[in-house]
Amino acid sequence: MASNVKPVLGYAIFYVKDVAKSVDFYAKAFGYNVRRLDESHRWGELESGQTTIAFTPKHQLETDELTGEVQVPKSDVHRPPMELCFIYSDVDAAFKRAVENGAVAVREPEDKKDWGQRVGYVRDIDGMLVRMGSYVKSPKED
Image 1: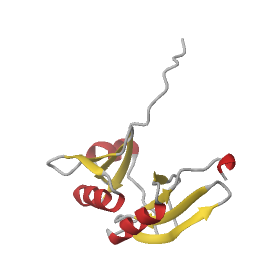
Image 2: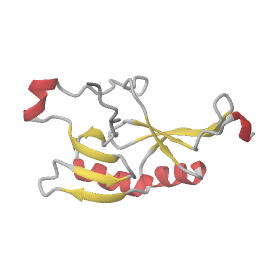
Image 3: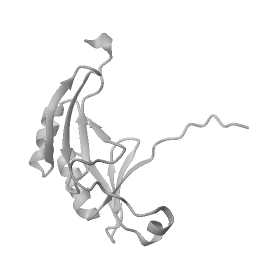
């Protein structure tokens, strides 16, 4: 019998060089509250609504052999096949805050008329690309 239960996206997990530094960076640069950082600094969480943003080391003995090692882009012209987007009511102010707190500016915020969103891009302290955007406007809102 098929279930009508829909899954909930519980975690977006970042595999990083230094969990404590990444937790601190994301809290300051993007404005999230730290939920927890375990004593071993092998797991950290930020509060972001229904989905938790979590951080863990790139290499883990218990999972590398089971699921493979984490692969990171080899340069700034490569990126992983998924993207994380943080939504803000004031993208320009959020972008400025991120850069002032150590994010590397990739592209200043600009209006994307094709889909009705203001979008900017930064790289975090591990070189991961982060989109910073507004809510997408429906064509009726223009």
